[in-house]
Image 1 (tube, one colour):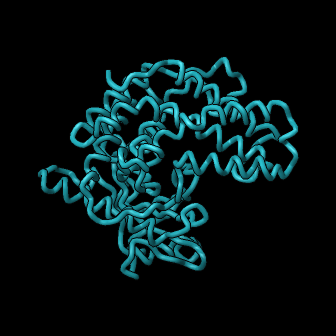
Image 2 (cartoon, rainbow, N blue to C red; image 1 turned 90 degrees about the vertical axis):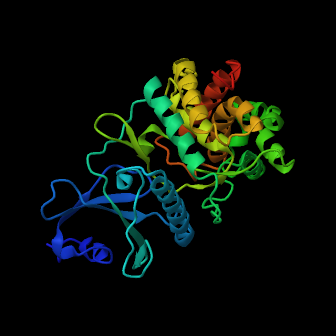
Image 3 (cartoon, rainbow, N blue to C red; image 1 turned 120 degrees about the vertical axis):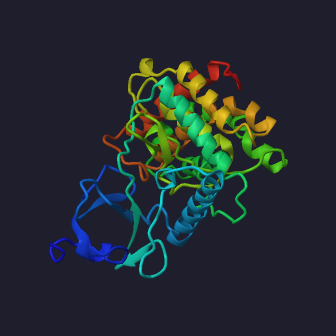
Length: 359
């Protein structure tokens, strides 16, 4: 079997493949391809083999170093607190025969982690799962608030709205496929620019020394948590995007998808509203998780974060539309413009709610 399965030689850098019975595809990740490793005597996978997408994460050494710093730090905190079942509460990456937690085979990068048995993910966003997410991602930030080792910015300017607006300006100036002649496009340029100063508040506060950067997850979704079979949160997963950012990243990015009553690319704008019940539940959980470190200026600007992320995503979709759809995958010619309209509607809905910073 090992001679026929191309993944066995890769797994051999991490585990004893003589004990491996199969390596099969697992899940449907959008960035990294993932496989379950089955071994003798186990009904559930023992390990997870993952192909690292180095087109997205170009510095694999930094990527894995960030993850090692974070997971080791959380593990030490849990050990000091005397928690049980720590291997179920934090991811563990195996070291390859190179001594690193990844290996390069040909031109591809791979890693292996322990599989957390009897764990599940959730897709549905309910008030309860929104609260759980807020509390869990808040706890995650709290655990990492005293990390001393430097964490690298794995995707530079990932959530920097000034950078995204600069990219839009460059797209407008180049107009490579002639879309700037459309009246709707010109209208959206004006609407976006009219609110640009307001939406760049976070970057200004940072330059003024009033807003810190924290170690954030930067991809906060309900399905980036593992639950046990009783519905209790076990741990945070998908750690690739961990990097220094404003807490607005973890707060606003979750709500951009979770509080949207429509689809990200919903052509019917009547479907798109901002769900206040989800907002309140997530806010409540997040404030619980971050109460030991969140500063007043971070707390009072959480409503701004909830509006920033649909605005930023509208800017990104819109710039890509003007550029001729070179970044996001599209299913039809107007797809990025449909996405722009939908995100702009969500931004308007969130902005009109006069959101509170406490519940």
